[in-house]
Image 1: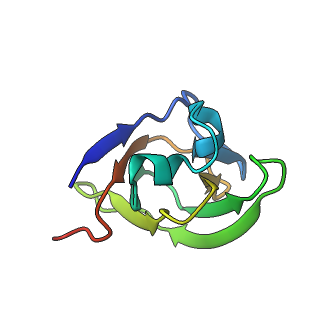
Image 2: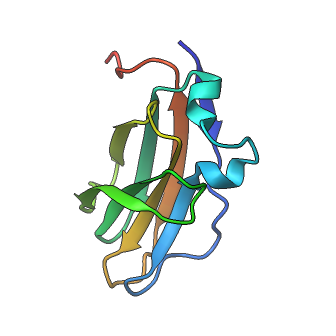
Length: 124
């Protein structure tokens, strides 16, 4: 099993009901089938947020010209010492992205950790 961290490059706190792309294979510079080339099966997102929002994932067959939504998961407010964790099986996608749709209230805390994994299960 191998783990690679993915960096979130956003700097502004999410406001209103805006959408923020957290990660996309199109911008990696590695070409289509990025996950398959690296043997990546699973993508993990850990979020420390002060207000609710939604994580949405999309797939693309044409390098991001058109995106089809794959999932939408509501994300609540974690307790003071916790984070929200979401995991996605991504190995079959030509291109893929995950976005945060802010819930309408400006975040006062917003921290993102993301990682790519070569195994399919978290193996808790």
